[in-house]
Image (cartoon, rainbow, N blue to C red; front, side):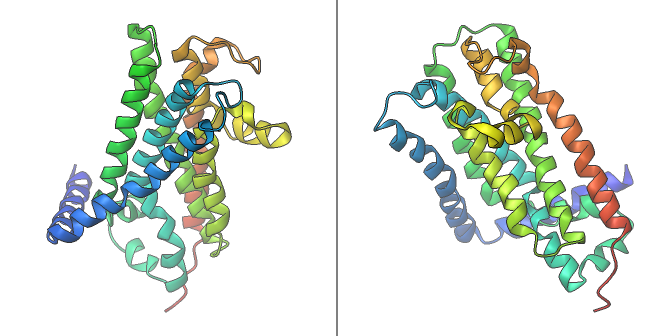
Amino acid sequence: MGELRAYGHLLRAQARSQLSYRVSFAIDLVSNIGATALDVLTVFVLYGVTTAIGGFRLGETMVMVGLAQVAFTLADMLVGYIERIRVYVRTGLLDTVLIRPLGPLGQLLAMDVPLRKLSRVLLAVLVLTVALARAGIDWTPGRAALVAATLIGGTAFFASIFIGTASVAFWWIESGEIGNAFTYGGRDFTTYPITVFDGAFRHLFAYGLGFGFVAYQPALALLGRADPLGLPAWAGWAAPLVCVPAALVAGLIWRTGIRHYRSTGS
């Protein structure tokens, strides 16, 4: 309980510091909408020149867009700061974290919870709400539970990707671009029906790494559509399941990196 109270104090201090400069915070809130808005706008631009992409209409694809954006923006706000671990390793600032009587991962995540990214989360929730309302879904308690389970599982999945790829910096400090390929690249992959991809790329990202179960398969289950690629209907419920191995792998990489960390001595 004492450790939780300490994290609570860190988070409240972060909130107070960010809210102290209200004009700056308000500008950050508005400017952070841009990335998510552009992602959504890109989908509309593509559907401006065609009626279907990968066999899916705009309304169906928007369900995937909403599920993917809510899961990603939540994970980005909660743990996205871990990307700065490479700066802490390079400068030796990680030493100051390790000597404190708190878990290093929890400290790093609590050191900067970017509340300014809350606007991106709210926009993503709005997109998902409108998409679900306009998709003609035959709502049942089971489908409502599927939406909740998909968002929780998807957020945990993207959070694991953030932590796992950032932890590579313990061995390869300039690994940021590789990490971005899986975090932001994975977000873009989950935004569209996986039927638009082909070959080994689709098999690796959709099934090997699990991105196909974050939005595409749950959207099929919500829409009552069979998978054109042949997976059974239960695959729509796999989002909470794929986050488990992803979290285990991310935790293993993180713990191994911490154990092998050597200070720069600076």
